[in-house]
Image (cartoon, helix red, strand yellow):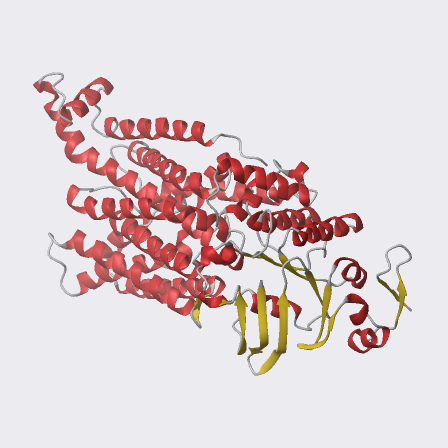
Amino acid sequence: MNPVLRPRSLFIALGVLLALAFFLSLALGPVSLHLLDSLQALLRLVGVPVGDDTLEQAQLIIGQIRMPRTLLGLSVGAVLALCGVAMQGLFRNPLADPGLIGVSSGAALGAAIAIVGGSLFGGIPEAFAPYLLSVFAFAGGLGVTALVYRLGRRDGQTSVATMLLAGIALTALAGAVIGLFTYLADDATLRTLTFWNLGSLNGASYARLWPLLLVTFAVALWLPRRAKALNALLLGESEARHLGFPVERVKRELVFCTALGVGAAVAAAGMIGFIGLVVPHLVRLLVGPDHRVLLPASALAGASLLLFADLIARLLLAPAELPIGIVTALIGAPFFIYLLLRGRA
Amino acid sequence: MLRADSINVQRGDSRVLEQVSLELVPGQVLGVLGPNGAGKSTLLAALCGELAVSAGSVKLDQRELSDWQGVERAQRLAVLPQSSTLNFAFKVEEVVGMGRLPHATGRERDQQIIGQALAAADAQHLLARSYLALSGGERQRVHLARVLAQLWPGGIGQTLLLDEPTSMLDPLHQHVTLQATRRFAEQGAAVMVILHDLNLAARYCDRLLLLERGVPRAMGKPEEVLQAELLQSVFGLEVLVHKHPERGHPLIIAR
């Protein structure tokens, strides 16, 4: 099958899609705002003097609640998709997932330690709780990934196959420890833990947003520098070496970027599955596997898709809210099965 | 020009390559022959730095192979492995274009080279096809075009290592491939090619190296190496050696 779109048409389409997702994410929510009011409030937020003071409420809702949430969703979606591309390139497998190297399970473990451990030691002061949780999740993701990478190394070379197996083993181990914490948890803690595992953009604030934004920028700037190396890596590691690329260094950078990116995303929004797996795959179907196009296009598509998933999560049962991990899994899993069947045909 | 001086390669406790010396000379094709497991691919891996040598040295243009910077080395040494694991739907021209990654010759020149390299491998009609839609033999030709493009147009100072480039090809394309390789050498490149077909080796190689269990048994012109007793002792196959009625090179027939 040949790619169906030229890169330029894809970027235009994705740009429009993202702008739409961004605006809808600001305009829609449990408090219904008129679309025109939303637009005017948004303009006022960036300093354009339009409308009048009746827009104050809309301005407050958009500026303080929906804007951080939207930026969080955008950032999480983009970074998960970018890391998915990196991992599919590293493992030379279009069906690889960023979770393969243990970063998601490590982050889940860190979160479980923070949530359950915190409650066992008499509870974390309310003000620190979200930060502590994020820090533990991030550290857990980084720690387990470092261990996976370490296990994959022998004689100065990193075996991708060994890393894959080490990732599976450590994911199982982390799962067991999380199970243990789940067993120890009381009902209220258990609820927190469960909801965290389902992922949510709820409760986004600027204070929790900036570390993730920083990481997303870093990853989004760094990975495209390795686009050519990623293309060569798809031929095979020795082929990439013969084409002059420092393969060991590239692999290290890919693992580090993914640990950082997925770690920060999970720390900020909990476990949100399938974005990293499905988005790069979808984009590849549209424009082909060239990483020079695939990386930026996946970032745009991932951001848009996550914002739309969040809209569904917010609006489907409004004013109640569905965890976004459920929405992405409900859309992502069937799509993944479709890809498997399609690949076999 | 690539030169190996009495190299040994160790794998665990066993020595898989012993005291191999060879020189790849500009303008010449060296064929490497030997039964399965004789160490042909190991030799190729040692010559391109994929495997470390435990003794001896490998020099590319008088400089230790390991001293070369990745890109600089890639501009003068290209390697075609036995098989490739590419599992992504690149277009054929993109795959061949990867051979141009070590260079900064510009899009237009690269496009020209991609076309010429594909034509050399008789695969120019595949240019816009998806790599995944190709047959095994077509893929092999595309990868040959890729390594040719990496060194294009070939010339003195360029070295090309090919591991069984004809293993999946039909008879016509076995010849097409080796003719392209020969022409590449005639431009000035030094070429080493691992082959199983003794008659192809006799026809297209200037010199042959015969390996047996990691040890060189003979090295020289085809008519010196392709001798009945030698072949029987190395391959365990009884053969008749005739002269090609038109071309005069040795022709090997199993008895």
